[in-house]
Length: 87
Image (cartoon, rainbow, N blue to C red; front, top):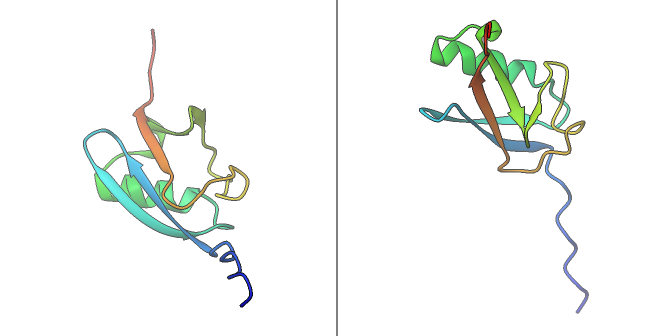
């Protein structure tokens, strides 16, 4: 009997996006720019992209980031925060 091989990394990830009130789950490819996910979340929640920021592990996510560039794993969470205006 040979050892079972470790499963190859799936091409898709399930990513949770939460703004503390809502949780939305997205299934995206590792190579997909996160802008798609960010736009979709804002559309569903009726928010403007300019009024929120997305964080992964405390680091701001740029629209051209991908799950691969951020080294995300299946089941990871993006946090959505209101953009702080003024001071």
